Length: 298
Image 1 (cartoon, rainbow, N blue to C red):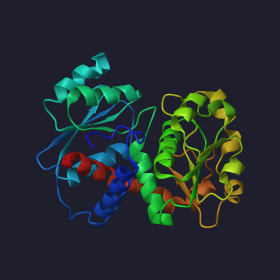
Image 2 (image 1 turned 180 degrees about the vertical axis):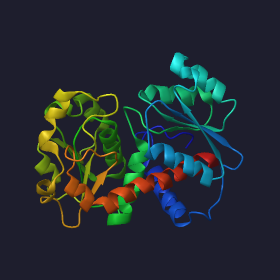
Image 3 (image 1 turned 90 degrees about the vertical axis):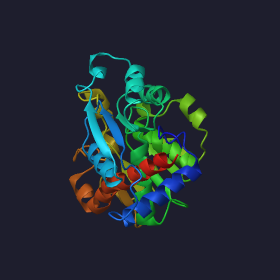
């Protein structure tokens, strides 16, 4: 593995190996190897962040490296320099790069032109680091995803749902996505996905029925704030106690955070399931350390 750009590009074997190593690194925290010793990793963030920034900075340091945070206002990207030029400069100076931005193509181009390991820390198309953390949480909480039904309630074609759909394709678990009709995956994407275990519905109760994992995210992604028409369409897709009454016994609730209580999830549900949701947030650190270790060894 030379880069981590998407779940789509990973094999099932690579996903499971990353999760196994994440569990090991979590158990051995403070006493494991430091494969990034002497290395500097750039972190280019054009989108705001709490969990992603903190977990990567801590992870790089715990693996012996030095993180260099660069917002769009710190470098010439903010003044219109092409990503390929930034990539060719940083590729001669740092050992790897973590990018959180809007366009997936920017991450792909950076990897191509820099020649250094590149990690997608979120784009509009995928959020692979979060999905790996979520899968680690499912494994810790439920023993794995085999024979389990996972439901995603919310935007059917966001970076989170796209990554979840590719994870279901790779790992073979059942995924039910409930979303308003206007916010479901387009036919050409579903044809490319070609995953019969992924179902799409406008009925959140149908998706939640018998589900072992109920997953949700904000209705408006970064950059979509103020789109009142879109937000209004999601009213029936709130994760609340009534919806969870249809889920399997012993189910868990996931939310990648930040959460807007009273919108995609109620205060009651979030607080009831806070232990797992914040375990999920912590697992960003361990999953991302596993990615860094894998790239350091490649």
